[in-house]
Image (tube, rainbow, N blue to C red; front, top):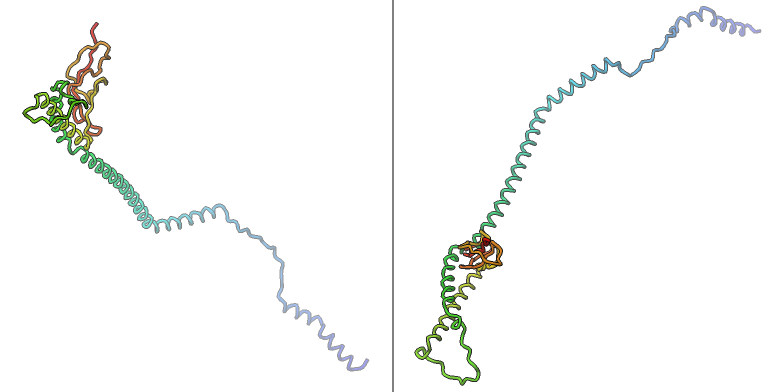
Length: 247
């Protein structure tokens, strides 16, 4: 071996001496093994209770901070409910008022002539009595036969009294008919309850009499005709009523 190679080997062995190993080992940090502990994220029951109390306290604090606004909102909702109820009641009252006003207006229009028509009925009664007082043979007009020769109309002086009576009867009958037609235009109509059952709302009993073959309470005679204006009684009919016969 050459001298240069020997110097190289010596230098290498000198670098690997025990002192060098001791220095290098002392320079490194010492590591000791320690057992590891594993921790759970779950909290104990006591800590959870405390956390719940803290959350409740924080929630109550939030509710206390929002309570004025919630109270105002609740108050406004109550006020709106009250106002809506009043509005519905007012609408119902207004509709009822409209219906009542329309009905009153219609009744006022239909029954406006009630008093005037009642006064006219007395005139109709007088004309009816005048027609009833004329004998039946003079109530009918005289029929002329076609075989009789035509003659000039007689003057008022040459007419017999019976002819004047017939003309008077015809004039009174025409007047009564025209008056009844005028009353018909305003829904005033007569009714004769003869043969009907007695109704105290429509009939006025003048007398009672036992009549064989008639059921008690039946109208047997109409002394004065009754009148209706629409469905309302304008004047009750004056009638005689059948009475139960005493055996």
